[in-house]
Image (cartoon, rainbow, N blue to C red; front, top):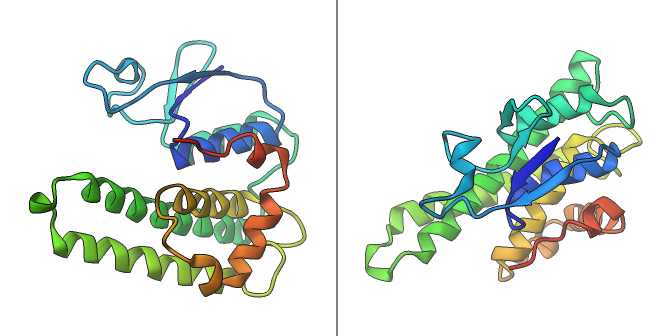
Length: 202
């Protein structure tokens, strides 16, 4: 199988971490989805990354759909629990982390526009969403080592990737001081090979 993504995509990183943790071999195709003639369009009509292209040529896109598929395709280190209540906890935290990432991406793109074209209301909305999301992620983790049980799940992976994206694009946001428990989780995740090997670089 082949993963089409950019090296700075936090959603692509989430998929790459899952692939590594589950020891699934794949080929990496690095692309810039923002280019008008990007090859991404050939595998995803929405023009977004990541895209997982299966051996039969079928494209799987949206990171949440991809990681769902990957967790079933290999029995190694399941990251999504089978039990319904636990599963909802993990997928709920993943959705929350992805929401923080969505707001961060929207904020980053808006700030790249010429100052006179930027929307102050839109910036404020995304900032509020981002900080509310961080508070919710912190509250969900509490004093626990992991979001669920005694081992890493997709919830931790998604949260770690969201926090990593903040470090990449918003080094001025001191989320570590505001949420020491998230800082502790991020530090623990950073020691894992899957996270070390996927640190985004601009």
